[in-house]
Length: 108
Image 1 (cartoon, rainbow, N blue to C red):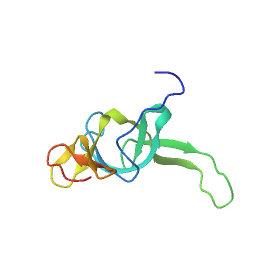
Image 2: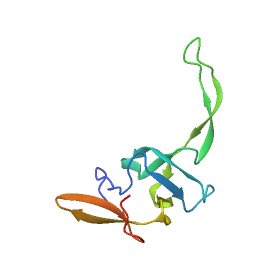
Image 3: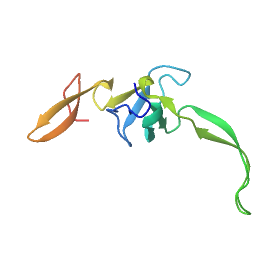
């Protein structure tokens, strides 16, 4: 893939996803941020790492904080309310494109 080409994600911000591989396998969380250039996604409560933070101002506390590190998009699956973790399909509803569950066909 060329250096300036970005991966097209079927997942969107605020989607609920489940981790399907890695140290946090089975954990669920909301998507906070999508990093298209690196094919990575930041998920709430998943892949937490300790990071040393410098004190920025008088009120700010420095020290070691836990933040969510990005996880590769291939290790995530969207959650369907009925079926659990599923793949995403698409249906055309008039001129709008809907994301649907591949198992039950319900809109995601």
